Length: 481
Ligand code: F0G
Image (cartoon, rainbow, N blue to C red; front, top):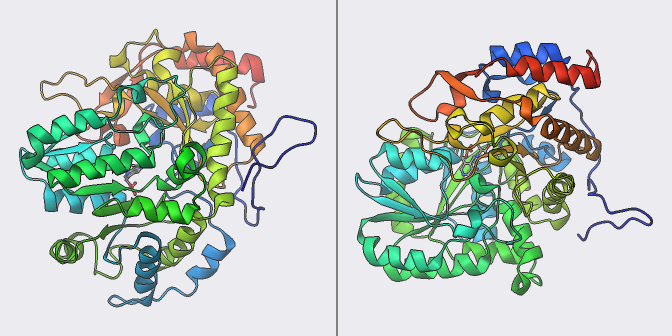
């Protein structure tokens, strides 16, 4: 669906749905937000949802369901083995991808666990455009390592490159020449989460998978963020614009040996799955599902969620539905960019990404500028985002910090959840925070978990900057906001 045009004002993104069920929101007064942030150890993951005004932590498992998805949940077939719901899900995925071998799993990282357990041996490498936290953690836990070959331009925050998730094909060729025998698999993430929800082009995926095939390396697509990526292929890749989303979906699927996804994103529900093209490989991988997930016909998922997901897959093929996320994100990013706030451009999928390295350039990388910006964003308006930077990295083996190539605060747009006025509020508070950025200071760990430390780590501010920030906020907006 093209954007709705307005008669006498600039275009705004349009919700292509109406509201049928709502959840009340509360905006705690500023002073109380400071207390909640202190209790949460300056880690936005540790906040209680009831204390948050706009939860933009993630788009994972928090997308709004449609009437049809909820209706489908009623016919879920609850059986430990042989659930009809499973066969419906498998058939729908086969219709869309051409692959009928489905290993169900309870979410995306469970798929990553199964893939890593099956393919990764100590000393192996997994080559990819860019890592995702959980994918990398499973690979390194088993003694493997990752090689990231995203094009260098993809890491430049301010850019006009339409497909910043593209892999560098020259580097990939050279990599295979050296390492193909030691490579567990090639993983392509479409779209690419940690560089700002940036898409990868169909042409690039085609060439990368051709190279993998020639090298005898299995190609794996992480399709968790494919919904947005399909939209960007259709709207940004000239040679693909005349294909329907369904056709693009099939063309992309045809390139890969294995496709896995988080159903918390792809399919608008909660769950996951791995599609394996090769029959023999599929059967060999099967054993891991009952061991870690559940029986082969539910894999740890609720059958209700599976039924909702089946409808969600079809909704993902609807341009009216999948346009909205990218259009709202673009509105937010373009407005912030026009006001001089450093954001990752061009706008991608998943959410608006603020360039914390530039906004808080006075904070050393070891004091987690993006983590500090996430904490400050909650203080300045009750908006919860997610740190995507050095805090989300694991330390180097010698204990030093691995400084992230991109240091961002992500404000996710869960699909169909937020309205335009809420988006305007976000833009307003980000601008306020940007204008008061000098007040924001760094963070340091009080308790630092060994792995995936960003989830449960406890931090404290360096100095009393949160109090000063709250004072400035109250001076501008009053005690009650
Ligand atoms: N792959 C990608 C590209 C993801 O974005 C995620 C999750 C996963 C795999 C893992 O899936 O959460 O179902 O286990 N991303 C979430 C996020 C957590 O907030 O970006 P999961």
